[in-house]
Each structure stands twice: as structure tokens, then as C-alpha cells.
Length: 579
Ligand SMILES: Cc1ncc(C[n+]2csc(CCOP(=O)(O)OP(=O)(O)O)c2C)c(N)n1
Ligand SMILES: [Mg+2]
Image 1: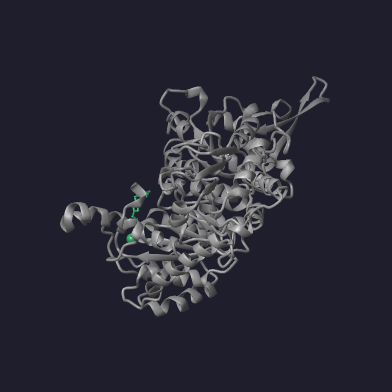
Image 2 (image 1 turned 45 degrees about the horizontal axis):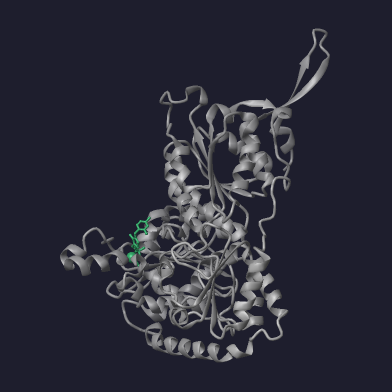
């Protein structure tokens, strides 16, 4: 950026009585130190909502050529930082003001914490000089952030700002990734200090690689287990994407002939149709397998806390976080480290065996394929349903047909997204985004914004529930304003349906419909009001043409699809998320 260096520091001269300059000193402000540290991290954009406590950071970002994406709610800023990390693989950064700015962002930080996303939230704070005196927007942010971050601290002096920003970034990568929080008191941020007194860690000089391959003896053990196994399967979890371990996972499955199931961000590691891509038969495989390898996903509610795995199977867990291995369920073997490094090492170790047993597992793969086909056939009539109002499975089917290898798909909603999970198959790794285990509604618009910013060449499609869209939908306008087009599809059932079902079953219709009705909102008009493309869809056969028109508009688009409020996904009916 022209003149950037000139504006980021002042060169003032200390003069002698005779008027000759003897000791030039460069001054730099706190906000400019923040921006320098962000630049060292490769941060290209911050997501922010303004406040008097943080404006000096904008000055620094302008000097460093860092984009400023100004949003309408701080929750959006934090979710966008989380989403940016997921797509770009670079730590996302959100900057929010003190007090309500920081509390608004907490949900986004919490979501990143449960989803293992590396992001930094910088919050303003009242001046240190007025510490605990009741300054405007003063709150104990660090205490509040501690349980939902890997690192939370106050910067005590301007000279330490860049140092502590770098420290916070480094802490994001301790074990499994996660969020960090830093608050910078207003007087600390605004002060100008001698550049020579400020510590600015040099880019690439304060990090070590996290690509550890675990204990070599356990790598050999796992190779032995797999080579002898007749019915193995592997579950590739989010960390496979976090570690960018897709190629290693594919090589592992192909060489050893192991069927793969994928969840979270690892969906799409194998393209649909691949010999080792399995989807519908996970429960069956977990019941029948003799060896189950879980890679980079915890035994949380999504895995039935590990209880859904066959009791006498050899269960092997690979994870970046030592604390996750063996938690909630005993395992036969645990390996801590990078998913790609470990899978590559195991493939290598197994190739040293006389026979790696690959062909013996053909029958097992054929058995699973047969079950996959049966369950796809059973679902087919509902996927093609012409019913009016539209069946959510037909909507999911049309979306699945619409996605290309270039489309990043985001799911943000309750029942409508649960329906889509069984149908929509991302065509490439890193092309599926959902909130993760916190299950936060409202991630859609911020994730879409971040995905388009990080990968402008990608098409971004987001399926919303009408309830979910309402939480952060105003930032559709932010996407319009910043030229970040995406295709939003609201599956509109006029309710918070996922909650409505369980409530109705438990309390009957009259009490079951309390606090979950949303009205019949015309989201397509909301989109056009904000400068985007909008269209409503009432008939199933209109879905594909409407999606095409949204794509061709090149604008931020929102299709308002009226779906049947009286059908529920099996997962919702069985309330599996609570079991
Ligand atoms: C921020 C947040 N608030 C509340 C919930 C609880 N919740 C889970 S699903 C759901 C209903 C969502 O409704 P909608 O987005 O319209 O999807 P639908 O179930 O109707 O398809 C709610 C309120 C949540 N997960 N996140
Ligand atoms: Mg709804």
C-alpha cells in the first residue's frame, strides 16, 4: 500500500539546544502494533463492528493493507473468523469493542471452541488508568472468556501488544486448534511508544510444526491390527481437514482397502461414487466391524459417546488432543498427533508386511455397498417427491444435484439441515461447513461471508432454516455491501420445527406449539430490500430453475422455499441429538 510505512510510524527528532537532530526515534501506536502482528500471521482481513475502544486497530489495518469487513452484529464477526479459518487454513481474526461488543461475540468464540477452530478475538477494554472504576462498557472479559478459549489475557503495556498478539495466535495451535482472546485497554491501545521498545516477533520465528506422527511403536501396532483385520472401517473426522490430511487418508484407505465414513469438515475427502466412500451404512459398519479407526473426532453425542461401536471390536483413536483419546469409551489403542502424518506412517508400516490383507476385505466392502444401495433405494421416492408443500428431502435432493466440485455447502438450521445431512454429498474436501458440536444456529451468513472472502473463486451455497436465518440474517446486507455473493436457500416451515416435534410429543399439540411458531415470512423480499436477488418457490419442479436463476444473477441471492412443516427427519423424531 502506497505510503503505508510512512503513516504507520512517526519519525520525530529529539533536538539539542543548538537545534541539531541527534537521536531519531520512531513512534508507533498500539493499533499499528496489532496490525503488524496480524500481518506477520498472514491475516488478510478482520471481521469487526466498531466502537471507540478499538478504532486505532483500523488505522493500523489500513496501513498494513488488511481488509476490514464491518458487520452488523459481533456474533457474526466471531463466526466469520471461525469460518475463515476453516476455509483458508489461516487463523481468523475478529475485533470487537468492550462490554456488549465482546459479550455479543462470545457465542462465536464458544462455537469455535467446540469446533476446534483457530481464531483470535480482540476485544476493547476500558483504560487501565480507570481499572475497576466503572468505566464505559467495562466487564471482566478475560474471566468470562477463560472457559471457552485456549488462551485469554489482557495486554498490560503498549510495548507488549504485538508480542501478545503473536502469543495468542501460537496458543491457538496448542493440541487441537481453538480460539484465543486478547483484550487491549483503551489507553494501552491508543498510546504511542518507541518502536525500538516494542517487541515484534518475526513472522515464522515463533512456531514449531505440529505435524507429529505419534509413537512409532503404536504406528507399527496399528499396522498389525489392520493387516490382520477382515472387517475394518475408518471414520474420518474434522481434524482430517484441519490437518489437510485428505491425500494421506485416501492413500491409507486405498492401499489397505478400508471403507471410509466421513463427518464434519472431512466430508468430501472421498468424492461420492469413490470405491471407498460410504455414507448410509455407518451404524451397520460400527455394529459389524472387527476394527474401527476413529480419526480426529471425539466420542461426543454425535458418536453416541462411543456406545454405538461394537463392544468387542478393536477401537483405535487418533487425535491431535491427548485429552480426547479414550474419553467416554475405552479404546484398544490411541495415537496422538497429526492425522496425515499418522495415517501416512501406518500406510508405510503396513506396506512392509508380506501381505497387507487388502483383497481379503473385498467381501466386506461388497457387503457394505449392498446395504448402501438398499438404503438409497428406500429413500429415493421421498427424494423425488412432488408433494406441495415441498418435502424437505426433495429440497435436499435438488441442492445435491445443484452442487458442483466448486461449491462450498453450508448448513445452518434445525430439522431441514438434519434432513439434508443424509442426502447432500460435498464433492470435494473442505466443501462442507456446519456449526460443529455446539450446534449454534446463525452460523450460515457469517460462514458464507468468510468462505467467499477466503476463496472468491468458489461458489457458496447455504441452506438455512427460517429460524436460523433470522438470528444473523441482517448480515446478508454486509455480503451485498462487500461484494461477497452467495446463494442462500431458506427451507421455510414457519417454525422452529426441530424443537416443535419433541415438545408436541411430550406435551400434546396445544402446549407443543408454544414458543416455536415464526410466522410466514417472505425472506425473498428481505433479500431484494437489501440489494440482493430474491425469489419464492412453492412447487418442487420450480426448485432447479430457481436455483439456476439465483446462480446466474451473480448477486447475493435468497430463495424462500416453502417446505412442509408436518414432516420431520428421523434424527429429530428419535431425538438422537440428546442421546
Ligand atoms: C443459537 C441457538 N438457539 C437455539 C437452538 C436450539 N434449536 C435447535 S434446532 C432449533 C430450531 C431451528 O429452526 P429452523 O432453523 O427454522 O429449522 P427447522 O428445525 O424448522 O427446520 C432450535 C431453536 C440452537 N441450536 N442454537
Ligand atoms: Mg424452520
